[in-house]
Length: 97
Length: 152
Image (spheres, rainbow over the protein chains, first blue to last red):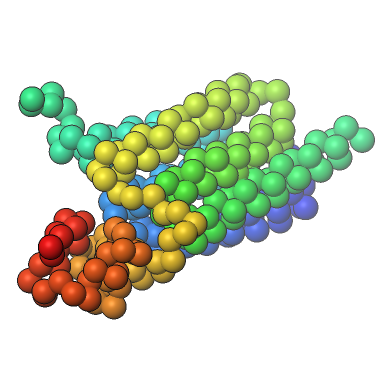
């Protein structure tokens, strides 16, 4: 289904996106403030979605599309949750005024 | 013939997605403050993942998996800028100052200022001009940054 040229392009894209994830890890480790780290983690989450889709193409299995849907939902929820935690210092309970 | 068009389009889309992912990673690494970093993380990274998903959908053809892929693409287009907005708003309410073009602080100074231990050679991160001039004639026990105590 996937010919040789497309397979080579997919392999190269997998290697490069994984390397870019490692580079974003520098911002997660170094980043001066907590929102910097969250931005780095959000970028890594989006890159991992792209990696899962490329793996779905490489192995020709629709299972990995479901995996990347779950990763997208978890990444969005975790980013919004950490943003709320930074602002209010709490996640679930209501703000005390 | 239509098969070669599909393959070429998929390769083009994956290459474009790779380019935008690279732009996003460079922006996250090199831009000066949290607001510009979240800006590039929302826009360039959404485009990168979107192009990659479009290429995958083009290779897969008309299958039920493609419907999931297109739905995931719309989900990413909605949620990724929302998450970046939430992080930037949290940073603003936290009180992190945005970087401006007349600000000649380096990345090392910003890192030190965010850590709370200001570098000794930079006088005052808040007001560079007048506070630096005032810092010569204030006594050492009055040098709180951001307070602006007037030695009348």
